[in-house]
Length: 354
Image 1: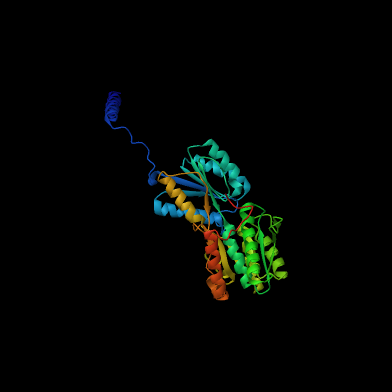
Image 2: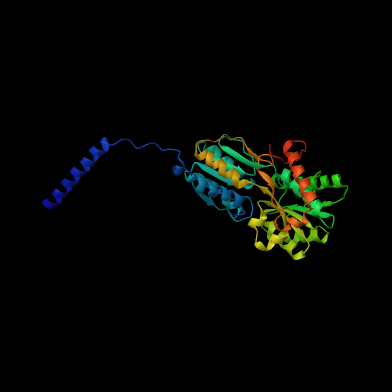
């Protein structure tokens, strides 16, 4: 018993000494906003992370910020619509300073969480939310797809090209508007009558698969266009576009224009021989800059809009099909790009971001 009492007494002395020392210690340093203490979370839409599209590009941007700015980044992958709101809530619950959501499907959940957490900074890709703590990341893809449409009209052997979308939503139809306008411009310049199937800009209606994941739908729609004589196809449908690529490859005479990123780098290598170009959104570059700036204490909620002028959109190199693009046509495209940047050629669409 005496031994036990002595032990307790010694422990009490040690504890008291520790309290005295603690009272003499300096106060803990306040939290800082250094990159080492900064973390970001991303939530994908239902297309998942390897969508060959904006989820993949957005995550690449966060990874670049992690590498170059020293932040910590993680992604929450949504596989269906029921994952969306819980994933955004979980991202906010992580306590990270920055939450990135990708796609219009996440607009409602992002708006709700941003309103409830005013000290957290958010960004959303491909939709616009007006709030002091939300940065909208948008792209005027009509400018770049105008160039793609002009290119398609310039290389078609059948006089028919085509486009289709996953759904009738502004980020999709913006591509389609620019594409058919580019075809019309080529016809006006060259006195040709190339047809653009799949989209009526005046009516704002056309061919849609109804989703962004079912590859078989993309293959079926594309085969129907090929049967009508189209030999250049622009799918604006996420993973559904891989079905278009498969149909184009099997046809042996159809070329594909990819969207969002350079399909030559992201699609399966078997499709490289049929990729004419891609209408690119430089999503990764925009995400990296925005999150890096935020980690350094700079955040403002005015929308970022990628254009030809600021390098946020463009068409990709022609890669393996460069020899099929006449030098004169390539020169015309350079001139059109310069005119759009200068403002002397205006590409318009009711879906353009503002």
